[in-house]
Image (cartoon, rainbow, N blue to C red; front, side):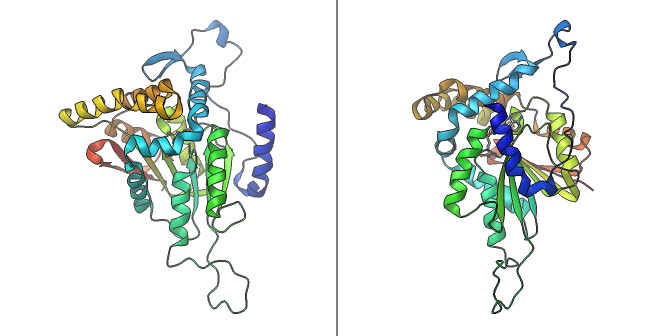
Length: 308
Ligand SMILES: C[S@@+](CC[C@H](N)C(=O)[O-])C[C@H]1O[C@@H](n2cnc3c(N)ncnc32)[C@H](O)[C@@H]1O
């Protein structure tokens, strides 16, 4: 089953071969022959302590379980506010025709679709119509690559893309690639923009994800991360904790039939580094001019960095 998926991803990748490396980077978390003799490295999965090598599969299970209701749950859980946060992410990026986005942990493509819509609505966008009566030449091609570890999330996104008229052949175009954000199958300096929205806290080795982001961005390219963070005000934090620990898993049970996945999602937010610490991790990965802004009292933050 896995091999079939890998094969089909590779087939999908053919039309984007200019983006791909010929060899994959070694994954630091891949098990070595001596791993059985050494104590297992630990990490967290929500509030549980688990073996590092098990976390990836556990996260996969969470998103496999919720993928078909994921978009609906986002609206219900955040009372629609996630749309405003993602719009703000796009205001910050302000993409123009000719941009190539890598949307890591992109799930069902919510951020990528916003990116493509922005390009289409840009005053500098001219559709690629082969007609002698076209007075203006077409604009540079633009693309979004949605990259995610879960094929089930990508499949949901592909269905949405078709209804919106976005495919690998449209301009701007979209493609869907399955894989781990810690080991990107793309050549160095391929993309102008890299986004990761509500995804990085699920990754096992966040430092490695950031180094890979830096590698695949072109010089001058921008890294943007939208993620749940730590609410600085203690009173608001109390209200927010009460809501998220008590209400969200119950909603998850009612809508997706899965209480535990949403319990994990809430717990994983509390394990994520605070805004300043995460900004330092982005700097340590090689990014310059690293800044962040809090949205909705610091419930989420947008971190930004440039590859210079
Ligand atoms: C909360 S969803 C966010 C989806 C989308 N970015 C959004 O904002 O709606 C998190 C996504 O991260 C993906 N994910 C988790 N761990 C990953 C990893 N190591 N590499 C790539 N994707 C990962 C999951 O499959 C899931 O689709």
